[in-house]
Length: 525
Image 1: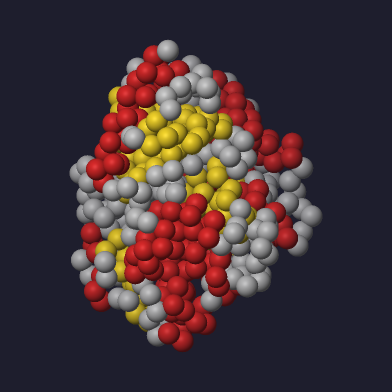
Image 2 (image 1 turned 180 degrees about the vertical axis):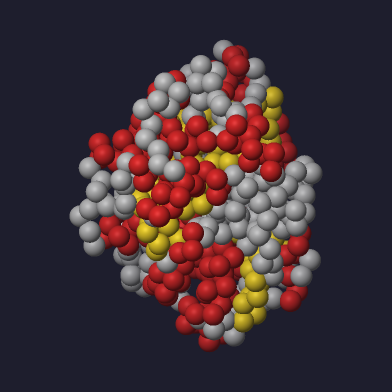
């Protein structure tokens, strides 16, 4: 990792090369130091752009600055702090300059802004579950959640202008002065003390459950330790190692080291000892994702989302009947059936947690979850808790569900399939040409002229999300018994096809085959 950190400071990106510019995706700017896509120059430029953005927005409160355990995160955190201090931005960091989980930063922003007119925001240095050599940075404005496209486009444009001018007008102070400027804030203590507002910690405590938590070398480590102590739970943190190279991690399905708590390969360490616990869980390095493990193994994220929604609709009596339930277009239709059974309104949006932020912040969206094991929810009395994904609360919700119902999450899900049918879900990546990728942008609801898909009548063709009318960046075709959605990759020469069938695995394969034929036709027209 020394060579990677050295490259972070030594390599200088060329802003005239598209690949080396600042680029914000659905989760901020990510890259690698050795490829000149994540270097000190990027952090200086992005942070100065954020300083400019918050000035334009009139923010006068503190900026909450966090970082995760990847090797490049601490160096990038120090670089960001150098810029913030030079611009005299008040900065709050974890006590003892420790690392900070994403949901703790979001919760801190919301707590501050609920009682102050001097608005706060946040920066989090993390590439999420990406491999050890990667780096990332994301911006959360005053609503506490991921910045929307308008904000990230503004920051991206300004940051690249700074890179083009070789950072000549970026203000910096020495590292020692920057560290002295930062004020310490006990993110963990504030968050842990508030948990009973969102999860019934007392019922978990009384149930005497044996719980296991694997932080996967990430920021959830001190949080789980504090939770176990504060609430006196029989909770074992099964791995307390922190190593920027993540050398203790079993390789993922493709042989790479990736801290993906929704992957059974990456979660092998916890799965090997699952029988020691009533329920166990894992988190990725910035703790915004959750992986739920019980006697039947690692739960599919879609399955757990359906369980959470069904449980919450029955066990949050304070929640108004008008509250909506959020899902992404590529999440399981089991969620649709569960929501309909509770006579609630479904809020279906494109891929990306940012689409749930407004509803969670304003308190009209009870729950927002995406297929990649990220979700958040309102407090028990219907207020905003975290407007970013909160992997820790979702893990604790699994424990609450077991404590209250006596059912493990997988048993609970099996009962849902008996009520609503069993869905089979798959994602397939297909190589495509630049012309085919461009053709996705031209698709509309009239592009599909076929009447059937895998033997069933087509009921809808969508290019915009029904929840908020936003473009899905692709297409979704539904029938009574299944659906497929396709969208091009932002970084690779391929498109992703998500598909689900309630008629069995053979029908799912047929559906994917039919989707491929349909796409080949409409993308060539």
